[in-house]
Length: 303
Image (cartoon, rainbow, N blue to C red):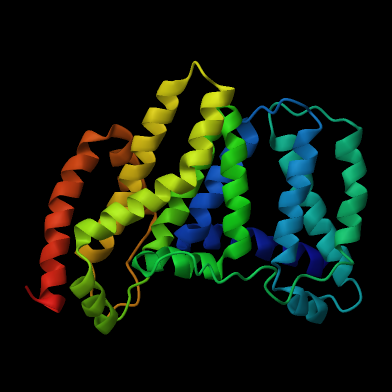
């Protein structure tokens, strides 16, 4: 019992440490938790199904099974069962709109089954995405590394178009991943070769076009389902595009060949989020950022 209490105490402290030190994890987690607490779904039975899928995805990504086997030699499956059961329960009863029903209770049986299903050791889905042109190499690289996550996220964003609130929540969640598309720095040689062929203006135009082609099904779906709420789509389009442009421009404004990636953190996310939300500050930031980015590119490429 003492070992079990120590383990859960460690898990609790570890969770807060990860959320505090890793914005790549903390921002999406906080946004998703906020959405899961507040969102109202058309049917009560949808909540447990969605929460179980989230728990199953978490389980599939676990890397701590060897650690659990070492610490809890005979009872490590019980630890998995306790952890997943507690998380499922917290999600289920954390939502202010959910009322207990048979689907939610029945899925506890599948939670038990998860303890006997080993996490994946290989990537589920790996696509080449060769149809994406080289001018969009950041997108191509990101999608190759995160194929199934990107497809799942895309489906979630499309499904979010059924209501203005879910559209906004899913959009805010997607912003964080947009930031990481432009976080890695290419090599000095690649940057020089790239900007001898293209200008920053062309890069901005192509990236914006590709981004809006991706979001086109979301725009259309929302307008079909919510024909009297068209202003939401206009604002959503402006908001999402401004954040994308701020992230892209920031990459080249701060580019240094000695650094592998940009120093993206929660502060940057919140700054760009607020500026994009209020629109005017983002426009001023873009104007000065593009000028600084072009100047920085010239130091590597020349005139």
